[in-house]
Length: 288
Length: 350
Image 1 (spheres, chains in turn blue, red):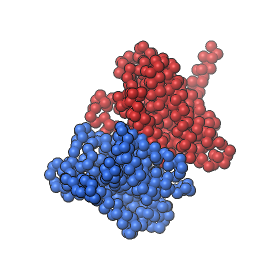
Image 2 (spheres, one colour; image 1 turned 60 degrees about the horizontal axis):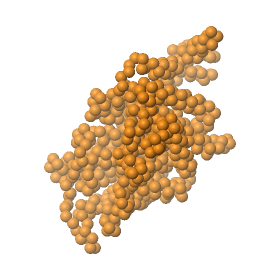
Image 3 (cartoon, each protein chain N blue to C red; image 1 turned 180 degrees about the vertical axis):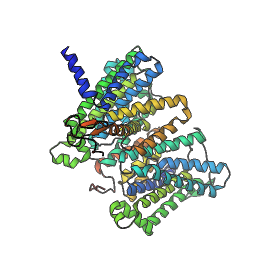
Image 4 (cartoon, rainbow over the protein chains, first blue to last red; image 1 turned 90 degrees about the vertical axis):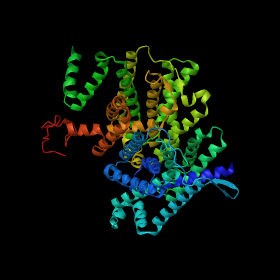
């Protein structure tokens, strides 16, 4: 019981952390609450399903899927979101429309029935006396590598510096000679790269269906605000907390699969009672 | 005779001078006269749902458009209204005229219960905290299937009226009266205070406005309206079933946002325009091309927002009417001089 909570909790943590990091980056730099974020994750899972079933071989399938998702994401951002970026409510609905559009496109091409992707590695491994599925290990490794890669990019490269500057203060970053619009588009691509990798990593573990973006969206939104909007460290910690809360409810409470999202959100609301700005958010209301 | 002449003069001087007012008059008249033209049950059902949803969208506009407290969990109010009236009706056998006010009262209470903790939250935090509430209520509904009907929902709820024409007039009548009342509220001092809270809450507080009280009032009023729409929906022939997958779903929360932003936020007529364009459209697409209906719908919303980001009704109003620069009275765009103060309008192109 404890072992399965730990393993599943870690897998969910990794997935939610990848999604929350990308979502938080896009929000921090572009001030765009991208409700279509997890829809791209769903499309990535379908992409890997499609390329795997046509027999491209796994490495090529992964490359094609991520490239497709990133290109599509930047195109959507440039066409529909950037022109209305200043109006928050309009952005909300535009991104939601993009999410519904993606879901419907998937429905038209693949139909409503749930799909399964064959695991990259089947079988089990004994880790400290606990049987852990190899696919779970692959998912965890992918999540860890992408998070480390994102951290390296953000803290050790010039582009990362530009991204952090733009997230801190868009106007001043612009004055310092950073092309803020270009940085925002790059961050959108980067966030969707993380989302695509998450979708690819979980496709063999979960059933792939057109509605699979709704639940992660709610959890990712909750994780990002739980940690404090604009704080990347906070959103990662929020993702881990909510993932473990969800998994423990499923394993410990009878009929818990109905309650998992409700409990995760209850935790978020309780944190708000104590700290209205989230765990790591700034308490001063900064107008940007 | 005197009143007849007064009415005629009022019509000529106040309504016929502005195309937007003519549109509203024609809209209300055609809505009331519609059963004279067609009594097709499917069309009537569609218009009943459209009227209910426009009430629901207006309630979102009041809270989020005017007061700026963006709520992404508005299905909580609609759903608690629907569930309260359906449960009272099926467990206690109360008649609809008792359960609908009860449903609205429960939703008002829900508005206050959500509003009080949310007073401390700002902007995006508020939007995402409200998103959580309908999902938590869904969890509660699913956790007690014996009482609430679980995932399948509540069936066989008492009908509102015996015939569909009566139901149509009842619901459209309630909708028109409620929307008119809300329009009056929004145009009054209270509406002005709502605007000021959205624009700058600190400044509003500095002017001596008790913003906490007005924010709670907005939550309660919005909850009441949405709850009334939900309770009427539960009893209407359009629903016949109250299930968490419909009335508490994420899509139900997002729908009023789509309609209102599409129509134009912080105007009472905007959300109504949005619903009366989008809902019948979606319904028609469902018949014509069921497979692609949401695809077409999403594309349409995306393109309209791309080119009219303030909403379609605001765009139409700014196209056919012009504000006089000296006295702020609205004029039809073809007029040469302002109808109130006579200032020439021709060179005042925006």
